[in-house]
Image (cartoon, rainbow over the protein chains, first blue to last red):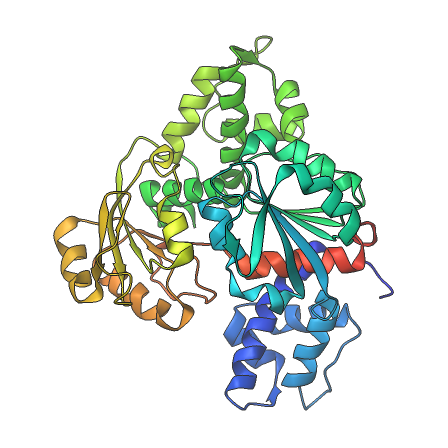
Length: 212
Length: 212
């Protein structure tokens, strides 16, 4: 990839991928930027510009081949690179996330589950036994883990992050409501459920129209 | 509120609130925009501008009173307006979300749970019995529901949305991986777990530094 691609473009790719998947499932093999505009709500010119970031893929007068475009996006997003993943915090939310069926679609392989709560240790979720935190650092070192998922409570999140970082992890999916400090070469993707809820609350109370 | 506030400002408010909560818990009663800048990573001038949207709250040379600022944000975000909420889709993810302890903090009261799966109907979660979809529309009509949560699968999400909208709902917290069509006066807050995972995958594969 020659040039740097902005994060706003990257964040639109999963949406394109979602619609291309649907088109492929319907047996449609060709799509124009105008068609994609109707589906996604982005302008056709924005869509062409987005794909140009990655060297195009389209042909004048033909549009895009659905399957090729989908596969190119998958390649760009790293679907096909298997990434070993460990989760810490296997309470209610952690268990739901661990059972989330679509890890495979993102090329992630959940290989370890950890918890500090004795009631959770020993449970088997998706064929993986929840281990005690005593084994955490050793496991990270021995298994070449690339992604950490933090579904533990906020008070331990930075400490866990430091241990992940020391083990050479490349990315963290963070559900704890804290801002994590990481070195520049580690990427943190935050899922802020509380911030999301509060934004919803705001618009429900104030009325959506006031803020359009 | 006299002027329109942009959604980017609204989305920063929960973060301010989070840090003000922490400061208050530590017994700190006064904070400058500079202090808040260090904590949040936003610039001091951005912070002052954000609060000016709501008429200020700060005093030259003093800064902000932590408790007042926090309470003003809570008022703006509608924490204190109770909002009756119904969830549809009480599988693994739905159950985890239903047990999410912080609904109260956002002024949301979960009053109804619905599922089309017979194995889930009759379960009691957080003191609420999961009902059959047969009762769904009647329940919405009779209980003045303001917020709907969709943790059901994508194929039913638009149909559920239409029923919520017909009942006069004001906002939807959507976990389904589809783009919902709603009238202008209904706000949809999407939680896109798959999009989030794919973005993480991208940065882990490509390396974070390449895209800074």
